[in-house]
Image: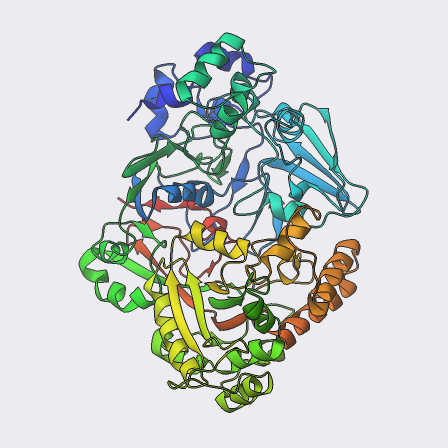
Length: 635
């Protein structure tokens, strides 16, 4: 592995030029033992000169405790691309969610919001990138002027997340530590996107990226870089290097707690502590506590067995509830605990009828709410819950969970009880009364009613649930075929209208409140697998996809627009309830089970990970909101 000083550090002279006149005194903070030798050798400034003038202090309250620095944490990934979990686990953003799912400053020392339209961020004086260079408003200016507004780097224009009704923001930089984004209309999703698990990055390490930008780079040096990398041009090279989320470029400076040191392809990826990370504990110890994170590549199907054999200090990826019994049985022998965190998605498993299917026959059926109701009523959710989840899940539609302030029982149960007789009546009513010799209903064009459900096939749990649903549907004359494939292939087939039904998880945030953006409930993204082409139409402002032509979906879209236009909390709640009601009545997605527990394998030596928590992608970053930089290994 490349030495730390070569990966992270410029010359000591460069540091001296960057230091502000007034800083915290060396005695205010504790030097990290693993970095002390480099400090003594003059290869790294002391901790008081590495931290911002006002670092983010993380008070660790009981049962958590201030820890000791050092050690490697082992975890496993099922594919090389999952090294991007480093950005998720590190969960460092301009603003972040706390454990109560409130947005608070992180990289920003503070921020203000005026009328939901103007957002001003104040950066931390003295904050540095992992290579010791200053983190300032110049990094934001570079992104806005030289990346987002450069047609070669951003041929599709400014990211849709920065547009409000087709209007880009006004961006200004009043001084070296202040950044301001402003729109003429409210932008209620801006902070949430900045705090997201896969966030909107509105800054770049300008000092590093300028070497690859035609506006700033030495032409001869840039030409050599393009030739060496075998890229088409400077823009392709810049875009390849400029990927802060993927964590695949060890040379790219970061603000995260750990810095990747391994280039793909590899079977073992190592990330080392960032000596300039901006958070400290209440004793003055710079975080993270852990020296290194080690990601080992393994067959995803073998990861539960390997975790049960003690090959991970922390494992939550590629294990599911059906591994729980096995994991519990091996705890004592392998020296770990198995925690159970409640998931927060609107549905742990949901079916997505594709209302934008290219097949005219299937499109007509999928758009008929009676057909969707029949499929939902034909599922025995209680049997699935008891068979696969020990009865601990919630049998429900894809909607908000009981812990959400927006929850109403009817949102969970409407058209979601097991009633095969009612399902059969509905199917007869819509012209599907004819059956073939095996009892399978016939479509109006004579084809058998055989639904191919496309799945990424990344775990056996989906297969098990689909098998049980298939048995249920056979009793109402519907044949189910499961078609597993790679995730990207499945998504592309859905986006293109080739898939007629798919499987994924439900609402990302089942704990939503009135102030949460309800964009998932309206056709606003092609990742809405039930209406991808309508989502494309919204995202591209009508340049691709299809206009929304179903009255209920049109109402959802108008409600979403109304929510975006108001700051009145009561009105926001009214809109949310109407949207949830429409979904319950229309069954645009078929939720099956929610509130399922996620097993998390934790070494008995690992300290500060909560016994109980919420396991969610966004918001939550899986375990990110629980601050893994504060986890430590007891010796």
